[in-house]
Image (cartoon, rainbow, N blue to C red; front, side, top):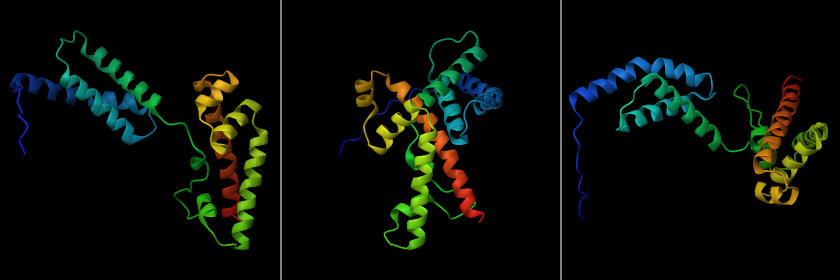
Length: 191
């Protein structure tokens, strides 16, 4: 097997020192900026790393370094948010850290245990109640995509709505449903 030819372009000591100085100077400020806009610490660290990676790869002169860094950071945050997947039904019934109770366990339990059947019925009743509380467009987007499994593109073609509008409606539905199902979960845990 032949080895790939690697040509190393040596980085000047001055450029290396400059990059290190910029990273040391701006890391805390940029991380604070990112954390105010991103909820996940791992995502925040990834974004900061991407910003400095882009800075290191930049070959053009930067006239206003601070402005350039914050603009690139803002763009990286926006890109990350655009790539986020829409929320799924799985997010509704995930368990919390403080207990072993997890709605998903109800759906993977094959036994006909009366308690499991009762909890399953409570879940579906609560879900149906919560769905009925939603505005019709949000309920429709959620049911068609999540329960019936129809892709957003097909729903958009049928309804005339944009995919982004449908994703937004589903997101609001998921937030409401998650809140309602968490209330039921808390009531079950505290009885």
